[in-house]
Each structure stands twice: as structure tokens, then as C-alpha cells.
Amino acid sequence: MIRFLKILGTIILTLSVAIFILIMLDFGYIFRGIKTTYLQGHETAYIDDYNHFANRLIKAKPEAAKWPLHSNYNSVDPTDKLVNLNKELETAAFLIIKNDSIWFEEYYQNYVPDSKTNSFSMAKSIVSALLGRAIKDGHIKSLEQPVSDFFPQFKEDLKIGDLASMSSGLNWNENYYNPFGMTARAYFDTNIRDLVLQLEVTEKPGKSFKYLSGNTILLGMVIEKASGENLSNYLSEKFWIPMGMQNDALWQLDSQESGMEKAYCCIASNARDFARFGKLYKNKGKWNGKQLLDSAFVVRSTVPRFKENPEYGYGFWLSDYKGKDIFYMRGILGQYVIVIPEDDLIIVRLGEKLIKKKDDETHAPDFYKYIDETYKMLNDVAKS
Image 1 (spheres, rainbow, N blue to C red):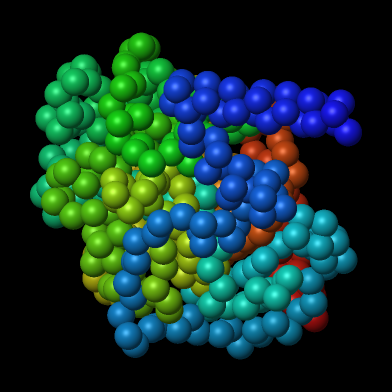
Image 2 (image 1 turned 180 degrees about the vertical axis):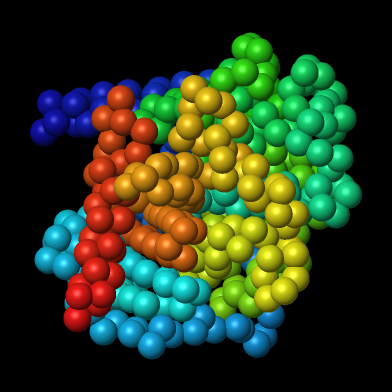
């Protein structure tokens, strides 16, 4: 018994010292991460974790504009490969929108059309849309305006467009698996403004693509300062309400006290409403006859900025799969809004997992699979 008590005392002392050291070194956010993930039965961030954070409401208008249903709505069964893929990767929602009407729609794991799930990095595309709107509204001069106009501590050669196109040269470390890294701190700490304002430009901005979540946080801060509104209210006013979103959404905050949206991620909404951004960009920024975004901005956003990196524009991922010009929004757990304009096609997938891409791959394997199986389903109709 005495030996047991000694061992227990040693364990408690060791844990106490470890906790003290973590707090003293400003890693206290790790405990928030443990509480939010491991103590909820997850190893990392997950699609329903918005309940464990402070959030700000993105208001929709009381009368939603429903998506029309296609004349062939759900008339074709998903392929066997798609069924197995959605089961294996724990899909929550899968939609195919053809000619601006829902052609196929299915929900899984007790999720329904109104269920909210985390957008993760699909939010980066939405922040890029907010940038376009801020330029249209005259709050920001252009993509070429220096970030230093809003935050003088950054070099004048860092332009706002460099943030949206992931070419800032900032010394942000994009590591999703290091609990002591910047990405984990941004997700679980309580003041991401302070974190980002400590960054420095260490490489020449505007010269090459390097995906950094810190870029979008700083971009969000610029939009916030330029517009005089928080990101959630600006998003509600300029997009959520005009586009007739079906449901209010939530945007995770770093904390209630700081009140900064996690601009690089974390909008909790549903598949039908996320899909509307695909339609908006497919239609060159026009919604029901009203130009919400300048068409030139939309075109520039959905073509490569750098010849050496054809996979990214300004906030959108790009692909030429099947010889088609494709742009899409994506999140870390396989969240997708895939737009194929030439076929008037939008594919939306939300869920828990994806097939991880290899280091030399630009797009995850499941991205291609969702496109392949969608075309097989559409071809089945054409043959019948």
C-alpha cells in the first residue's frame, strides 16, 4: 500500500510539474484541445466540434429560398463504389446539383438537410468572397493594396492579394499534427489576432504558392478592420441574406472575449447552403439577377495565379481533371464544394474522413472518386 501511494504521488507530482511548465511556456491551450477532442472520444478536430467553442451567429433571412429539385431528383441510385466510399469515409451529406437544381441528395449517420457540420478550410473560399465584396464596397482598394495600410508592422511589399493567393512569405508553420504548432494554437487558443501579429515576412511576397492558414486569418483581420464589421455580420449582410440561405450558421470564435472568427476555418452550416457559394461562383458572382461580386474578381479567383502552381487561385483549389476546368472549396476532413461550370454541375460532400493524399499529390484521391462516380450516375440517366 505504501509503495502504491509513493507511485501515485510520483505520478501526480510529475503531472503537476508538466502542467506548470506548459502553462508557464504559454501552451495552456493544449488542455482546451484535450478537453475538446480526446475527452469527447476524438483524436483531432471533428465535424460537430462547434458546440465546444464560442460562436457568432451568421443570420439568414426568415424566408429561405429553397433549392429547386430536378425533374430527375433521386431517380438514380448511387453507384456501388459511391455507396462504399461514403460508408468508409463516414459521409454526412452528399449532393449533386445539375443545372441549378438538386439532382441527387443523400444523408448519412442521422444527419439531415438542416444539420450543421464544420466547414474547416472551405471557409477560406468564403473569406476570399468577403474580400471580393469588400473591394466591391470600396472598403479595400484592390488586391494590390498593401497590408501595411491596415497593419503597419508588415512590409509594404506584402499585398492583400498575396494573402488570398497563399503567397505571403509569412513565417507561419502549417502543421496539423504538432500540438505545439501554430495551427493547433490557432484552433484552441483564445486570441488568434495576437498570434498572427507576431508573424514576419521572411520570403519575398507574391512570388510563389505556399498554403498557410495564417494568411487567411490575417486576411480576415484586414476585412474586419476595413469594413468596420465582424466577419459573421459582414457575411450575413452581403451573402447569407441576399443568397436566401436556408439556415442560420455559426462561425467559431477564438474566444468570447477576443471575438475573432477563426477566418481560416470553422463555419458550421449545411450542404445545401455551402452549395450556394458554388452556384454564385459558377454564375460569375451573380445571384438572382444581382451582382454580389464583380465578375472579373470571380474569374481571377478561379484561375491559377502562378503558372508553377496551377492548383490554386485566390481562395479556391483548381483542377483540370477529365480535361475540364474545375474549381472547388475544400476542408481537411474531405469537405468539398466541387464546381464544373461547363457541365453546369456542383458536387457537395461533407463528412468525417478523407483519403489522405501523398506528399507528391495535389488533390486527395477521394476528390477524383466523387467526380468519377457522379459522372457514372449521370451517364446512367443518359443511357436510359
